[in-house]
Image 1 (cartoon, rainbow, N blue to C red):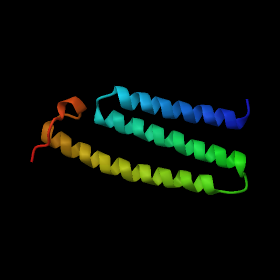
Image 2 (spheres, helix red, strand yellow):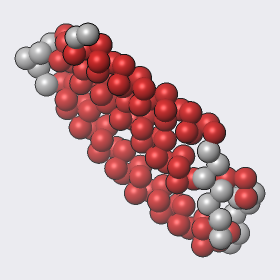
Image 3 (spheres, one colour):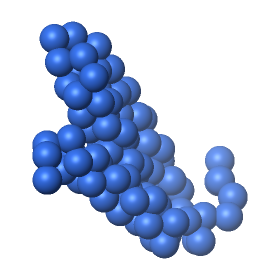
Length: 102
């Protein structure tokens, strides 16, 4: 098996593990981790295709770094939202959060 196939199988595995975790879990933190797994699978695809198609260019690598930076900002924002919801409802389960208290 060549390197491209290995990277694509790994990236699709990461992505679908993230989809499964996002759809089956009700805890906001595990949903956040699952979304990060999906983003990492997409970034790995970008790097793999860039390496295969244009090995001398670094466009895919720069896009992957941009995705990681966006994921870090998203994680910081979502952790702040989860902390605020926990302070209001004393739970981080999606099913327990019906409305926001002021």
